[in-house]
Length: 566
Figure 1 (cartoon, rainbow, N blue to C red):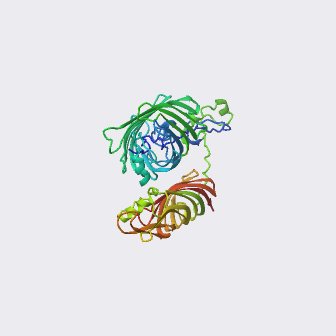
Figure 2 (figure 1 turned 90 degrees about the vertical axis):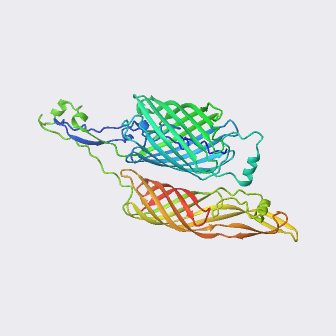
Figure 3 (figure 1 turned 90 degrees about the horizontal axis):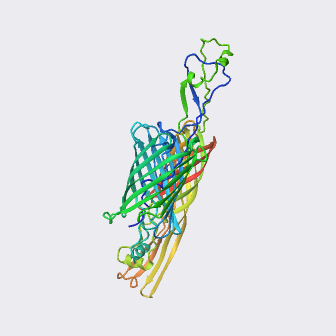
């Protein structure tokens, strides 16, 4: 049974809670020396109050604690999180998981999110999964008891499984040898559904619970179900700067071969949430294993940032908002006791961070990951024998970029002919590498030459793109989606072995044929978010997927860079 990195129903990896609670400062004009005898409606603005459909601020952040999610974000609010999880196993070295998450609140109680997870284990590491999430709250807060919310997530496996989830069998070793020869298995795709429950009791007790079910689509077809819950109370009541509580999680995990013998994992421990500012939050949860199948310790540390959302505006009668004006002050105004006075708060127009027509020049760095497992580097003798038998053991590694990842950079130029759409040209280059071999065997001499080689190459691409964006009113944010078509070049080298003779690695004639780089058709699409520091300068982050003509060629790409607008 191989590790699927504790298919956490909580997505503790996914996870990253961010807390932000904002105070509302009601503006009043102290120079006004009047009080209305009849109620007049006014609109005042202040610091944003992050309340999702009437929910308390503690439930309006999508994540209640490190291992528990709750309710939804306010419309057009954004949640960014960085989560570290360290698991101390009862067998083998510890495992470290790093998760990055971005989530956006939508109207009608919807949320969408994207998440990427990376793993570090026993000296190795890399990208593990990329996830897309959605959730929907059934009703406004407290309209239904326990405020149920439906959550769905799909995980794309982009890395390899690096360790067993359970202790290896006594005296084992055959499986490890098999993996060394055939390469580590690929992290399978998986889907997950959850039921999120949350409720506040009085003013000082908050509770949330998740029930989850997750299933792998391929590989060992791991199946996991369970629950997690947390109870928290504020210690420093002003702004709820500090909260403490208890958190627990139970998981029941099986594979296709162990349906009747599940792995039970139960962890429990304290949780602490501290808000350094109104928009940031730090969460720490050391959980301790209580069953043989649980890790000795599972420690979460998360830093999160919440911002955006609809503007905080409120309406109220003048008589209730301004009744602190004294009769003496009103008398000095010279108004008669029967006259009315309007209280008007000036609401300045929102600054415009994005233009209706503008040029954008974007420069970014990138990390590309392939959609297949890394080349397993099998024995060269086995390559000769398996080729002569008609079934070469070359693995299912990427055929174009070659390795399991590549670093690079690029840029694009776009012209937005309206606020929401633009056309452009994009180009990027990747520093890629691909293992290969050079084999020559001739029984007439006899000679057998076999050596490993490495194809170091630069993979480049040029595309024409269409970008659609939505600058959120009164914010610096603009989510965007884009797609493009073009050509990719510089990759696709391959080594093909030709053999003649009986199926014996030392009794055949063998010769390697080398094929150089190829140019292929490329389609690419993705989505991301831009943040404008100033009218002409911004920061972009996005995730995209590239589809290259041919089998086993597709790849994903993270991009982060700066954008200049003119």
